[in-house]
Image (cartoon, rainbow, N blue to C red; front, top):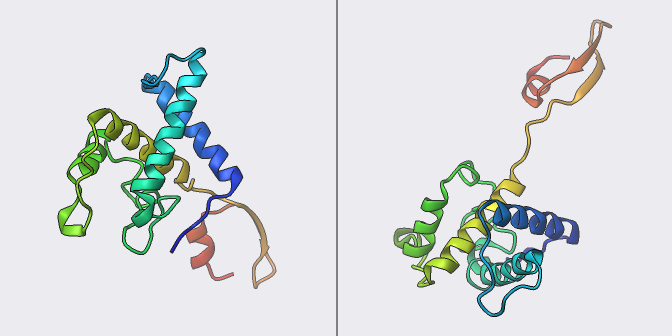
Length: 157
């Protein structure tokens, strides 16, 4: 099952990836020297996005949220907290028992792909929200404040 990513989500993911690459020191394009620092980041981003689409999206979906043959690697509980070294190991060695083959990629490409997966996971993390609610209980008392979804779901209003 193929999934598509909206232009807004793609732009957000691109910004997160550029930020992650900048924080990690980035990897300059080996094809040609960059005229400006941003050009190298854009080249890396384009290359790693293509690599993800070619190698990972077939099983994990275009947005990494799972596909017909592979699990969600973006919003799963450990996705955003998994160490980069562990992501690199999984990409390099695969998960033979789960059907994921080793990648056979050079270390530099594995590192770039791992940072891309981490950036997708960070962007895909759903923040905990507490909506402001004004409700009238059954007994006529007005209740107003910030409530968690669990409180709202378990309360007898």
